Amino acid sequence: MGKITIPYKPRELFRAYHDRTERFASIVAHRRYGKTVGTINDAIRRAAMFDKDDGRFGYVAPYRQQAKDVAWSYLKHFTAPIPGVEI
Image 1 (spheres, rainbow, N blue to C red):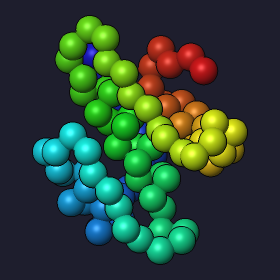
Image 2 (image 1 turned 120 degrees about the horizontal axis):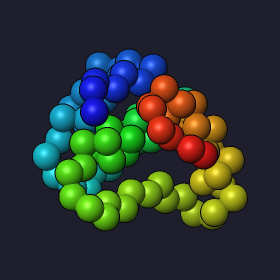
Image 3 (image 1 turned 120 degrees about the vertical axis):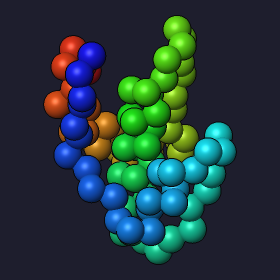
Image 4 (image 1 turned 90 degrees about the vertical axis):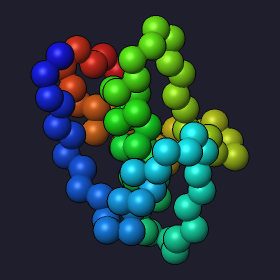
């Protein structure tokens, strides 16, 4: 597969989060900083780069409906340019 470009430009303070080597991480930032957008795009990038057979990636929120309301539209928007993606 060729190079995939998604329409996301991380804020400067998110670069360390995206460049981490640890599996789990946490972000402490103020409201409206872009935590959801950053974590969704991090999951998309890690899923696209995953080279094994059965990768599982997720987004966790206190309630299912809350996760859907908060993150689903971002997931659809940022995966739209990827060839072969069906939602």
